[in-house]
Image 1 (cartoon, rainbow, N blue to C red):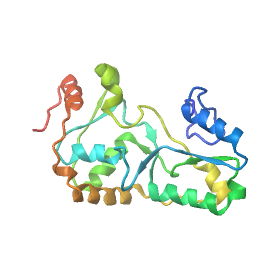
Image 2: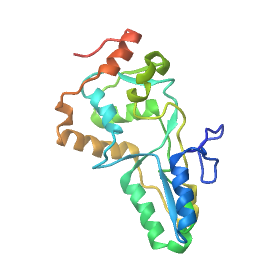
Image 3: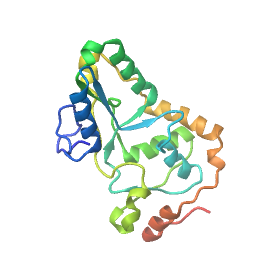
Image 4: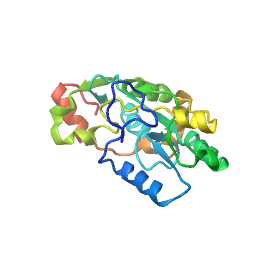
Length: 212
């Protein structure tokens, strides 16, 4: 929801996009309720998450497939464990007078590059990884479906939570990904039949070999 900046990370108070749905919700809440706080999450990992994050990388790594990443792979993003984010919400509930009327970036305090995420997932799985980079324009309308993260710096800092609530991040991405990989295998997703049609389209454009 933040406008692109030349000075990442985003902090609370940075300009947001006027047409962002979340901004409209925040405005409505602030006008209707006398006591409120809003939280702006980015990407999260943890049991029960209904949106692929680390799983997207594991799907390719365990099958010996290249991991296609748009652009340079040096784009910064923020990935937080749900345990970490829930502790922020708890801090706000425990200190309502401090939290009231505030906006909090609900994120961890460390960034990771897109390439770095692929490498950390491979390390968690104890497997090698082959990263390939591609121009998302080369696959047209499939670009948004090809990769689970934004192809840009998408990195915020939880400054307000630290300063106002005394919150501290506990996300340890390398260790948390080991936990996530254990569950990934436990539920049998490593053996699931998964189609990689868009990946194959990308790899064909790069003339990269595809594991069979």
